[in-house]
Amino acid sequence: MAIETRPFTTEDFARNPDDYYRAGYVWQVPVRVTHWVTALSITALFLTGLYIANPVFSPEGEAWKNFTMGWMRKIHFAAGFIFAVSWLTRAYWFFAGNNYARSGFPMFWRAGWWRDLWHQLWEYLKLKRGPIHLGHNALGGLSYTLGVVVLGAFQILTGLALFSQDAPTGPMNRLFGWLLPFLGGPFRVTSYHLLAAWFVFTFVILHVYIVIYDSTQYRNGLISGMITGRKFYQRGDKVQDTWLG
Amino acid sequence: MPSESMNIRASTLAGWPMTKSLSGPTTYEVLRDHGVDRRTFLKFATGITATMGLEATFVPQVVHALESKPRIPVLWMEGLSCTCCTESFIRSSHPLVGDVILNMLSLDYHPTIQVAAGFQAEEIVDKLIHDKPGQYVLAVEGNAPLADGGVYCLEGGRTFEDRLREAASKARFVVAWGNCASAGCVQAAAPNPTQATPIGKMISDKPVINVSGCPPIPIVMTGILTYILTFDRLPELDRLGRPKMFYQHRIHDKCYRRAFFDAGQYVQSWDDEGARLGHCLYKMGCRGPTTYNYCSTFKWNDGVSWPVGSGHGCLGCSEPGFWDDGPFFQRLANIPQINIDSWPETVGKVVAGAAAIGAGAHAVSAIAKNAVKPTEKVPVESSSGVKGEE
Ligand code: SF4
Image 1 (tube, helix red, strand yellow):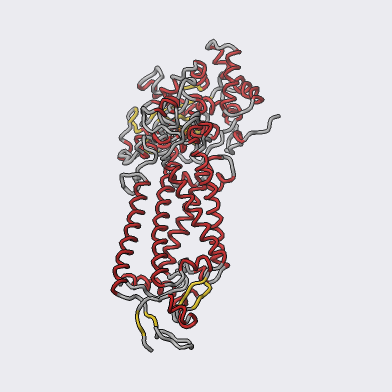
Image 2: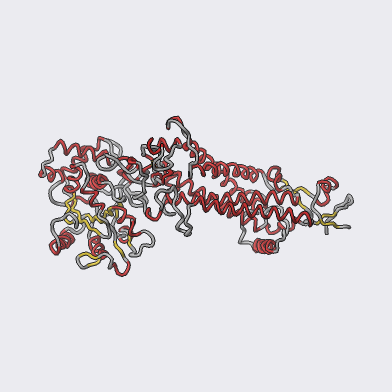
């Protein structure tokens, strides 16, 4: 059989989809829903957060007729709670979902995960694509964990702690208020919260770029997969997901 | 009977009530001796009740306490400090407040305002420690430098640390007066060469009430002592050991410029239109949103004004480490922790920008590479059966 090396084309796919190009169900509904809820809430959070940190525009006229900062904060808090719920749902789905739902988290207790991690890292250092995974590879999963799960948790916790200051006797303050003195006082926590927001934004830039690149380059349905749940793969690709168990 | 408000939730401490063992004239008796009439006294009692955040039905209880309970003996010590706490304390413009502070406490020893000096003065301390153990309150202004055996603050030939520990060992409880004593203030700012240490970090076997601020508002001191006299217990403290009745809310929560904050109208430079119109000082570095103090409620100098009221942002002087959170006239501090001399947003922009540049560079190189070199192995022909690329 003649093997020619070139990217997939739409014609290849149209000619014989079943052959080497299959659709596999990867992302379950909760994964997809939380992904887009997170994407939207992070966008709202980042934009309103930037204004709260540095209010660049001001309305004219009487103070009582305007509520610009007020609305920014309200939207920020609402989006923050939505993000927190989304985070919790996604975290729950780590346990309840399929294996792919677990592929974004470091399973450092499994030797297979470490193997996959080093293998992937080595391939990347050689500027190669490495083995193809249907879910995340171990390295990608680790980035996801740091960029979304850990940073997200930090933002949720510091955000709730800062928010709890509005009601010093409320339950929120009892639950999260201790974080403020623990992290050096509300003023510094504000700085850390803003700094972490920029790290999240950095993650978003890289994430969006890589997704677009990968999806157009390899035609694996990476973007549409987050809507339909299906990704395309070739024979042999799935083998790499074995570390998921 | 009024229900107990959250302000007077009991702090359980062994050995209370504290006023049982005291003796001597009551606050009211001392005030009468100083020519204060009953009407003025009642006005004071009403005012102080309101200040403590209690409702009017508590006034009789407060009056009764001031009339019937002996004054609390106070030993006032000064360590590394600028004496601004004392200055604040003796200059409270409301004459009665000052009078009451000075009379309500039986201020047995105060290095700045006492007449006695030298050995005579030091004798008073020894006497107080030996004669009234477990009765007096130790009020500390300033803190103790611990570096090099404490030699950076010597009093009467002894290190302040030594004297402080001795006095504290017999005290009923300790009031850490001002930011120095409660959080370290300027002498503990980085790099803290003398290792100035706040009182709460040195004394662990006694309750320490942190009355933070640089300096604190005089009425806060009066309020706390009246509270203790009235209810025979320490006030409820926040996570930093500050009495909740005065340090529960942020400056920002009760600031009269808050309407401008919510509207989004800010002073952009010190002499602009917004500054004249009294807009919010948030962008000029006001620390009100993260500072817990009583200024926006009670103001200074008998309600004449306060920092934000005179057009200057809050510096956050009741918060630990506020000296290290500069520059003061910038919304957020530079990031000292990682030694980058710029504020979080700049750092963030650099990181995000680097990521964007990296992604862009990769895209360009990928496009260039693609033009010359295929990237994927694909079988071009296939029959109807399943075929792999292998
Ligand atoms: S002036 Fe300061 S304390 Fe007052 S509303 Fe503005 S930011 Fe808050």
